[in-house]
Length: 304
Image (cartoon, rainbow, N blue to C red; front, side):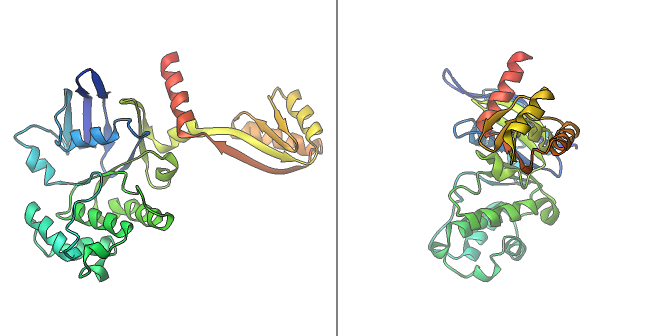
């Protein structure tokens, strides 16, 4: 089994409105797959389709090497942990008691609770009432619930939503370690590319229900690279040098903006600017916004 999730032309329509439009996902085993798109792009609907919470209008779903059907759905879901929207919980009960309820529902022994609490770093809070938890602790408890029974696949829908910067960092660190700690493949959604770049190795980009890109993070990053910005002491000299090399320049005081070029060409330009005594002080590369990447990917698809 090379892929833990495979969909073929998966579609979901509500009347005349198509929310998920012929999506063919391929999530490699052992990967952390970032499912990225703006709010309303179809991410949550796709995840609900994968979990059998709603029925597709067309297309097929294979999970863990098996095509999902009504007859095997429950057996497959026992091997999958999920956190969709806000985690369900009983605030008047302790973390331990909440996890015991999930164990009963999943048919998992209570001995597994120690393991998942250790993973999400809530061991010392196991006897606290959940109503006393911070939002970040609630999210970690939700992941602990998803991890009960050692699932082979984790599906996490925007798990950092509403968290403060410290909570986001904790969640990133936790998810990054999932394949190593649990042996689970992770599908995680977000509307922020910058949030997932630090933890995922595979990416799928969805917009208006259509999959615009799927592949390695490094391949996506080539789309996200923007212009270079040079800070120089002598902008006139720098502009003359760059224009003589056929480079388009936009100047604003000591800041010069040039289009992205290959690293070898960039090194040669920097060398020439130094030879011409342009006084290079700094060099940075801008990163395109997710919206700009969408436009880039969409225009490429239309051109193709």
